[in-house]
Image (cartoon, rainbow, N blue to C red; front, side, top):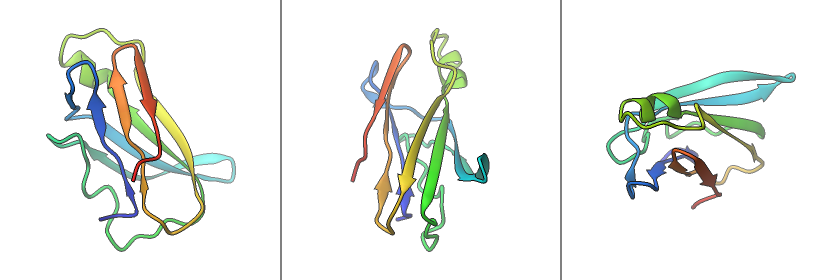
Length: 112
């Protein structure tokens, strides 16, 4: 398993959100640099966002979830065209950053 994992649960449906593009950024010199990208599978996960042997350097990171297209494909209006979650990596531990999503709200937490 990679050091950083995520998944999306569509809380309106009670099911994983598949087909959502996710972009991982690292903050460097006051700018966000893209370091990885992927699309969620049928389980709402990207199992290979990072290679298993990659250990992220300490610092601030951002995951951007491109939610507009996900809802548009379902003909569902949404208030959030994307969701950005900023977090800090300060150890070599595993970090799980899930997104609980619906068209008019979202929440996140540090998972295990």
